[in-house]
Length: 110
Length: 112
Image (cartoon, rainbow over all chains, first blue to last red; front, side, top):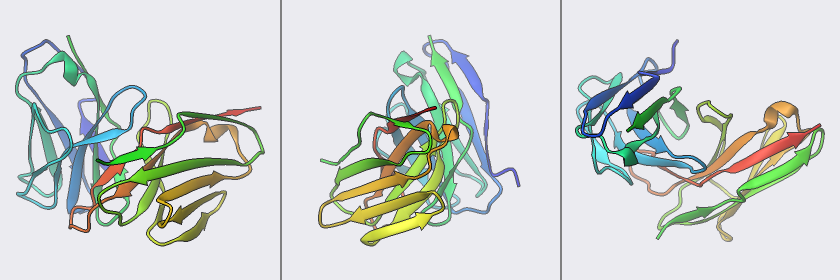
């Protein structure tokens, strides 16, 4: 079992570029989440999904879009990157209360 | 509004006991979780309290008082590897999503 995996691990973007972060889980979890974590801060929920084909907004959704076409995958897209989106992005999945996190993607927007 | 308050840093000596407090103010409450995160790593689940009282898991215990909107994580027999950040998180709604609101974390430094 790989658990939750994220690709890429690191990425540098220029302002205005787009990219997609991929999250995959092999635990057959229904619920998946995307968070961002800024230095010295907790995790803030960007978007989440309660099942295949569903998505919903979290605390800080602006500038991001998501899709969950397959149960095991949850994609996070940045259409036009901004320096304010420089952060570490974590994906997580859960079946009930305990969330399992991926290793994170460190994104820098210059 | 919603807020979770934790101390930003705590320092303790190897072998000692440390308590990390969390007070919360949220529109709903259905449970308090604790997560550990080492520098450069991913958060990992430690414990969950839905009801008042103490939950014990090895060297770690977690306590909840819903009437006081307060909980704490207790770490006993501290080891150097316990140096990490600890986050409390509240499940605010009883919807099907199990989504959490996280505190800003407490950085624990264990000294020899």
